[in-house]
Image (cartoon, rainbow over all chains, first blue to last red; front, side, top):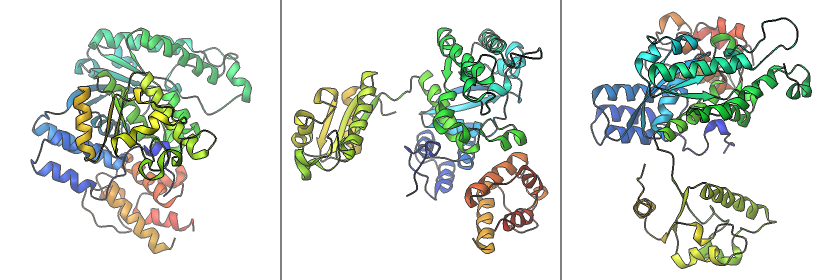
Amino acid sequence: MPRLSLTDLPWLPRTGADFRAELRSVEQNEVGEWGSRLRSLSNQHLGLNQAIALARTLELLRARSPSSSLSTFRLGLVSNAAMDFLKPLLVASALRYGIALEIIAADFGQIMQEAIDPASLINTSKPDAVLLAVDHRGFPVCTASPGWPLFDPLAAIDELRVVRDALRRNCGALSLVQTLPAPMGLLFGSLDVGTSGTLRSTVAAINLHLARDVPERGDVLVDIEWLANAIGLDEWYDDRHWHMARMPCAQKALPLYAEFVARCLAAIRGKSRKCLILDLDNTLWGGVIGDDGLEGIAINPGDARGEAFRAIQAAALDLRNRGVVLAVCSKNEDAIARTPFRSHGGMLLKEDDIAVFMGNWDDKATNIERIAQRLELGLD
Amino acid sequence: MSPDDVRTTVQRIFGEVFEDEEFEFSDGLSRESLKSWDSLGHIRLITAIEEGLNVSFTIEEIESCTSAGKILQTLLTRN
């Protein structure tokens, strides 16, 4: 199997060959509630063409009857880039969080005009939030006078402030403000980062300001800078697509970009994931506790497999420490399944860290329902 | 990849990218003959071909690939 990269959304299942047939069957028959069926179809890795098909089906069905299981969200979209390809992917990603997204997109480049004119498309559409998808190519970062400095962050910071205030005043919408990916080009190589007046230091100064100012003023930050760094700037930017069609980034980065924005929408709607359910054998440790025994499982420091499973446990502990509830669901004898938590020195997770422990031979779906009941959480 | 394989792959990609339209694949299939082969459709098509065949087109090539025949011709000069 080829290695999946972050842009492939490796945590989602791959789509089957019958994706389009399934979409058609949701469109055609009335079996079950269409919202929940579309939602389960969205929980796969969808490329642009599949997202277009899914968004089209959603639009068709929404026009026919409202869905009882999806909540609605109106998102305004303004950008210095062409958002045509991001739109269907945003719709598909929001569905993963139970949101039927409606997008009102301003014309390309109309950022300030849309914000300050009370009669603009965005302002009259009364969106719940507006995504300001603007990167360094859309801000007044070049200084007007010739000579040094070439770039300055203040005009861009002011412009963003004016846009956000105007949106709040004219349509009451939250702004979703993106941090700016670092530019590719350097002028003085390694000196750029520490030299004010370069584009790199200017973008960094804008991001630093946004990280503080956006949450302080009740808006929402979308950390696209991190996203671009995580996949690599060389993968993020696609100059051909920028010059031909003003695409903000490479097409293959769009599904991840959309997923990242959708998570912010989910958080605004209170639909962030609240519980992490963990399997045990070959998930929290290497091997099978029932067969390999306490001494046989891989969870010791100093051993490569053990270190890898400890890293998983450390990540789960971090989530617990930020308030995510941990649960265990494993096909095992309960007492045997609990033994490593109680008496293996290599385990980072202890029994107390697990809010609900389901070690039995019942099917996973039933156990997950039980966990949700016990925690009084919904299954969404 | 043989010229036949390239043709088969390109034909499959056309079907996936323009799946909402009925059309016959041939060398003569051009941007004028498909409604969804507009400027955005063109970029979706080119990107899908680049991914599917692991090639990269220049801007000049992308602009001149206005029919299935021209795309196949451009691809075959790569081999």
